[in-house]
Length: 152
Image 1 (cartoon, one colour):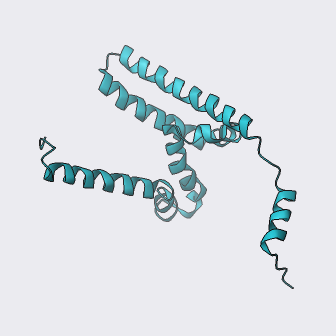
Image 2 (image 1 turned 30 degrees about the horizontal axis):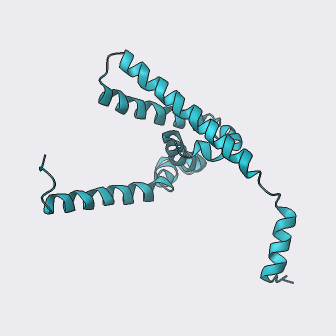
């Protein structure tokens, strides 16, 4: 016995079962948590510069450190707890990228290193990387062909 719902019945059922989101509060939390993550990133950058790295090297070291911290917090199941409160504030920073790579890999680790972790590692981030790299190569080729690049 299957129950078919028309669009209006489904919409009414959805409204009954799904409480409305407190949009202003969600936006405020995302802003505050995302800002806090970025503040930590700035502190990490200042740390690397204090240790003697030039600005560009400190930026690279900061990115690596923040990806590591995001992956570590994901492995410790702390990032998902943070995300429950922070919402979109945890998606945008580079730590969210680390989380999007590590989460699927952890979920399928019981299937082994190759078919589990290796196969699922880039499920979410893979398309982003593929299109980002492809777009940058195409942009670079266009720039060189139009004479805008110096070839270096």
